Image 1 (cartoon, rainbow, N blue to C red):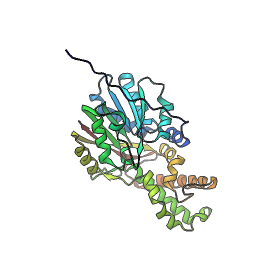
Image 2: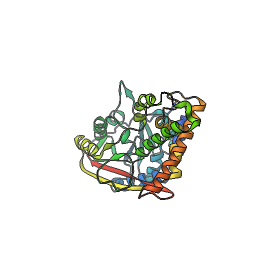
Image 3: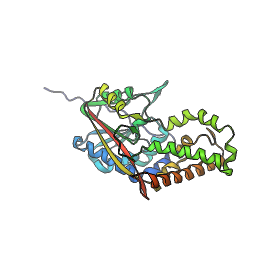
Image 4: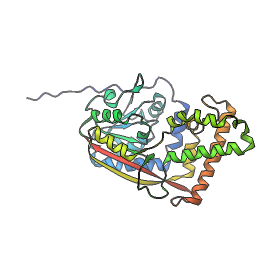
Length: 325
């Protein structure tokens, strides 16, 4: 005689305050961006053959819910979707956007001392069927612990797939860029504008010192990209097998990307030399103008010199890595 065992699922998280203005701005800037749709649609295309009715699917690093909304568009009510993030401020926007759906739950990776809890510590070992992560993994400082926590959270034969537009590799098509490499170029152009435009003269004094001083803040929000070999090796070390890698280039419209670059929360990482950690109203406006002008100059450079760019868009390469437990 067999005895059915019911495993109690962890309690879904609920925010205790309204969504932050930064989360709202980011969400609104990218929710309808064609590049976001394209790269997440390709992610769901790769994982679709493994999805079964009523699977628990984790969107790891769900942020404000932009990727989750796209995952739900693909799988609708077929799956139970668990949104997981380490930022209650950003996940609060995802909750606002998606909590009315009966098949959606939310979980926060709690911070313990100097690190965040792993996925298995948060939702339980062998508790989920699939883990997807869109445009987030390159932000994770500790790949080893994170991937092992994902491995432990998966049921046997469960799969993990992630993508990022910020991964280095040999063999990229000529002209294919990374998202963050364009952000670094916007920063450099903005610094050049400060040095030559009289309007921004006040930011010149001590500028080189501030560039060095604020480098950790810039790297925190826009980390330097790692090579694909680092990801593949860590996925293997975590215990995954049947590891596959894929690459796809997608068009990034200048208009969509400018909306992304104008998000104030991100601008604090793009150009912290203007205003620092606590900018006043004028510094916020000046920083926005500098980043806007620098972005438009970057777009002109791409139109003129990049073989994959045209008058409306440039192209970014997304890397995809998948593994099975």
